[in-house]
Length: 157
Image (cartoon, rainbow, N blue to C red):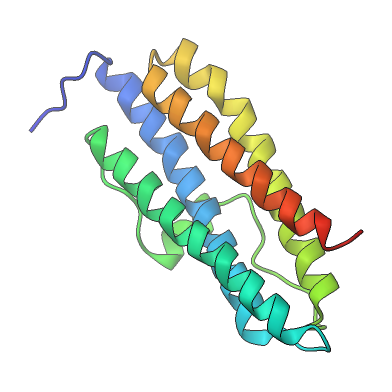
């Protein structure tokens, strides 16, 4: 059934595609954070193991929320690893050492990259595509990533 929410069909399609890219980024970041949780080693193992668990829990909710936002706009969310890897701008490559500093630096760089991408899309969603709801949603998502990045950054001081 066609989605009639006051946004033109082509604008809905453009927003859904952009959100699909956001979803792919979130899923890759979630997976990398889960990997850090599973593979962390060192004297701070337990604290960082729990810290990464908190972070991937937040990302898991974000993944679900972004997918549901795409569905709200009347489009289907990507859901395969192949689709995510085609849509993401993040790399799933990681360094070899499983220490907390390395994982944190890598995850922080990814959060900062996601933040830059989200910030660039806020105005585009609201103005170019007349979707204030997605613009507002992305602003909130950006604030969540800012806090998550701050938490990562605080471990490096």
